[in-house]
Image (cartoon, rainbow, N blue to C red; front, side, top):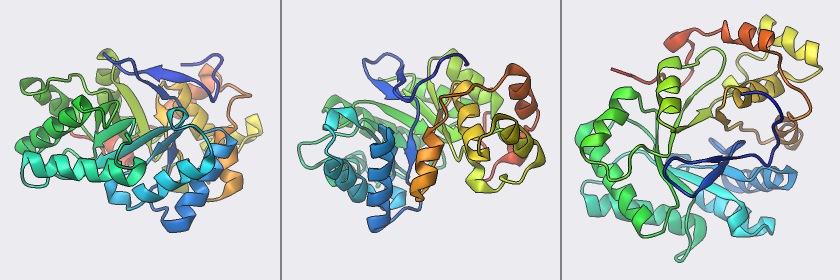
Length: 283
C-alpha cells in the first residue's frame, strides 16, 4: 500500500460496520501513571487507537487516560486481549467482562477484544472464542479477533465459530520478520493484519541498511519502520513512553518510501528467525 496516507485513516473490519484506525499506540510494559501520561500524549498528538491487554496490567490506566483526554469515547478505538481461558465458558466470559469494566465502566465497551495467544490448545481456543462471541453479542465489544494465530488456528475456527473470519490478527511484523504466509492468508480473507513490535524494540536502530534509508529520507529509523508497516497494509502499534518519540512515530505522513526502497527493506526478511517475540505456526 502506498499513495496518500493520513493519521485519520480507517480500515474496515470484515463482515462488520466497525472501522479501525490504521495507526495504533501500544502500551506494553507501560505501567501506572507512566501509562496514563503516555496514552494521553498519544491521544493529544493524534493517535486514536490504543492497544492494551490483560497481560499488560494497565487496562484501568488506559481507560483513565481516555477519560482524562477529554475526547468523546466514540472517537477512541480501544483494544484489549485475553491470554488464557478461565476454566469454563462462564468463567472465561466473566474474565472478559472484568476487563471491559476496568477500561470503560459497567456500562461501557471496548472496540476490539483479541485472544492474545494460540497456545491454549484447541479446546482452550474454542472456549476463548465462544466467550468473545458472547461478549460481542451483548455489545460489550464492537469487534473480536486473534493474536499470534497461524493459518491452521484460523482454519480450525470454522468448526465452531459463529463469527468467521476473525476481524483482526495481530502478529509480530517488521522488515526482519514479515510472516508472509499468514499475512497473505489474512489479506485474502479480509482479516485486518496488525503489526506488534513494528519498531523491533529498537534492537535494529543501528542496522546499516535501515540507517542508510532513514538518512536518505531525513527521518528517524523508527519513522521509516512505521511508514514501512503502513505501506505494507498493516496496522502498526508503535510503543514509546517518551513524548517526543510518541509524536515523531506518528509524524510519518509527509513522505513515501519508494518501491525500490520498500524492496530493500523487504529483502531484510529472516522469516521466523527474525522474530524477537513470536513467529506463528501455520501448519
